[in-house]
Figure 1 (cartoon, rainbow, N blue to C red):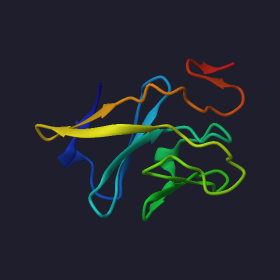
Figure 2 (figure 1 turned 90 degrees about the vertical axis):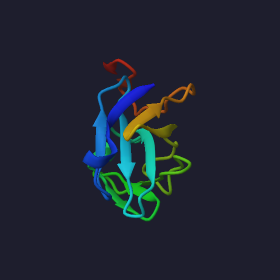
Figure 3 (figure 1 turned 180 degrees about the vertical axis):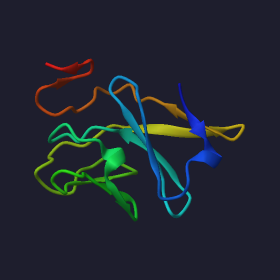
Figure 4 (figure 1 turned 30 degrees about the vertical axis):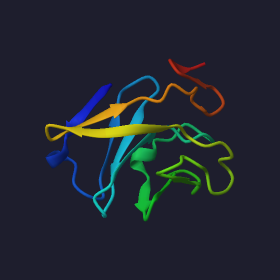
Length: 116
C-alpha cells in the first residue's frame, strides 16, 4: 500500500502524482470523491495528474483522450487502452492507495522501470 498525502492537503479539484513504478495519480474531485489511476496515458508518455478533471473523467494534457476515473476506460483515440484503477482508502485522515495487481497498459517505449 502506498501513502499519498493527508486528505487535508489535497483540495477538491486537485491531483497528485505518486512516484511509484509506474507512477500513480490520485484525484480529489470537486464532488469530494477520491480516485487513483496509473498516471501515464496509454497513448503517449504524459502525466494524467497534469490533465483536466471534469465530472468523472480526466483528460490527457497531450491529445485530449479522456479516462474514466471509476473504470480507467479510454473514451476515444488516440488512446485505445484503459489505465489501471487502484483502490483508495482514507486511514486516520491520510490517503492510502492499494495498487492493482493487474499489469499496466503503458504507452509504446515505456516500461514499468522507465523508458526503453
